[in-house]
Image (tube, rainbow, N blue to C red):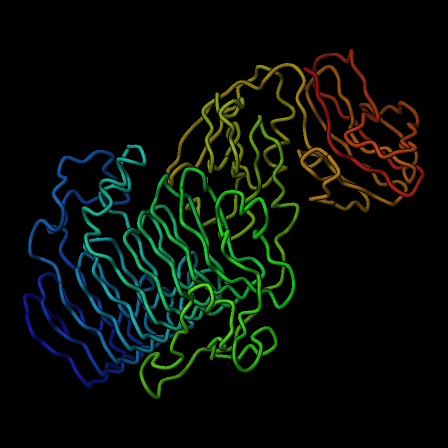
Length: 595
């Protein structure tokens, strides 16, 4: 069914079965229509598409042509060619996107005040409900039961939103962007009292500057909420089970509020590219529970920033079974006397989700596997700190579709990296024309360059390609044990030791004959490791020639100790190698290379 230039048209109590494209398409001007009480099964594209005309948008951007400046600062639409006051209610929508994959149960774009209420939406390749842009807000997403979405794509949520409004691509400071944030997202979009289940990180994905949202009274199963960029988002009175709040690339003074939520998870917050001192959010009066175990992030350092100072780590006292042992649990009412109630949380009605008689979400899938410590280790790089792209959250935050490259987690303004033009969240994708997939593919060519040599970096920045060229610094450069070292034999990596090691990590081995080597360009090198009573001797080779045994024992533990050093080498490419010969352990912490 195709509707254009219509008013008061109702599509009720029908069955749309295996249509080849969109089942119901509201195109351009449509007002006060309703799509209610229907079943949509195996649509070729979206079940209900509600799409305005681009001529209604003031100064629209596209991926191929972003507007970095604007001249039209008039709020709201430019023409009447857009849907408004549409209701999508009490439908059962399943298995959409049989042919097209950028599809949804309900897809809305360039529209205003769309109400999506009481629907059961499940099993689709992409989002179940998608808000394609911030024009012009005022939507209400409520009382829906949503699960098994995003089955054939990634970096997306069952309820997904993109902003991409006039302010988002501007070449302007954060205060200017904030002043423009409601030019298009004029009215608050409300996402309330939905039950959402997802098999990945975020049930609600507010991406690319999505602004002016209220998210409250939702039961979020197996996922959480992502807030990327954007302004004026409030997340309150929600229950997060096996998921948390993901804060990605926040603006300064963004007006975000995270309060009165219950988090049943080990890791409630994930921060990427966020400076809380500049962002100045309100985060407080939350309850965190990990079945009596530790909860990441909620510590003195976090509270010292004024965050969660009134929050508690405590059992929220869910009635009935324990979700950590009963993955089928769907009732998350908290009992009288719950610490959540004492902080202002109000119980969420555990009924009224979706269409009566429709299927309900599957059991939880508790995620316990930690991130790979090698990939997530922050190692020094030209005074900055870099990691591999070790998670879907990192990949999403930088706007990539693969895991290749090194992402700069911190770039101090006094660092050589910053002075050379690198910035926080830059992803180094190539070095001197060679693809960077991981640490080794960056450090291997870098380490063999002479001091002063050109380092040409292909960088991914703000979802666009950029180039940075710098000179390899002269003098002595400190390299971590992960920075291009080749290990042979049985070595392990120990991280977050708190012992004072370089980058708070070391490689260690207990196997005699295990070796570690570094190829570098310079005139000298020092090998750094630990000395202690449980260490022994290592044999050192330079350019294949043995320089004898080195005793690494000491009465007290010495970290970042020089276990071998040499200078006066002919300027050029050399290889230093250590081989364990005795003792319980041999450790490697890094190298100091002199040009």
